[in-house]
Amino acid sequence: MTGMLVEFEFRGDICVLRLHGRFATGQDSLYLHTKAEELKNSGYVRILVDFGGVDYVDSTGIGFLIGIYTSVTRSPNGQFALANANRRVREVLELTRLAQVIQLFPTEAAALEALNAGGGKSSASQAS
Image (cartoon, rainbow, N blue to C red; front, top):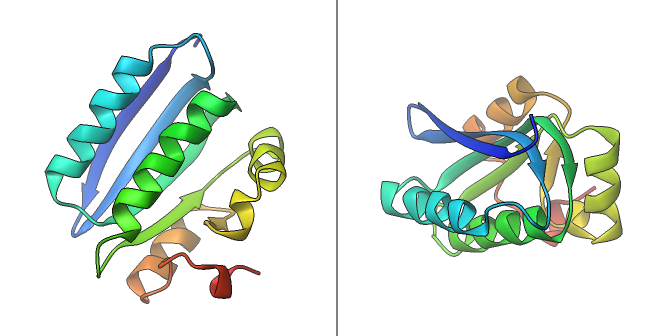
């Protein structure tokens, strides 16, 4: 897959964003903006971002992620978690220091468990 795809899956009061493809400069930024607005308009504030289908991310993808994270965590009940990031994606998150802010989980199941337990409200004090 050369483009990018964002799919929404609703699990109770949690929205799972399934990302696929390359989230990179030169891809369709209008598409990402539209998807971010769609998520905001859904009213969901407990978000799990599944990076399992993403093989590459750069500033375009990071900008998309930060926009969603900021919107979600402004809500009093907002929770945000990220799962299934491959080594390259994790390296980018570590280089940008987002790994210190956003909770990263090795699997979707672990992220869902944390969100259901009230974890995932990302803050620097919760980062490990």
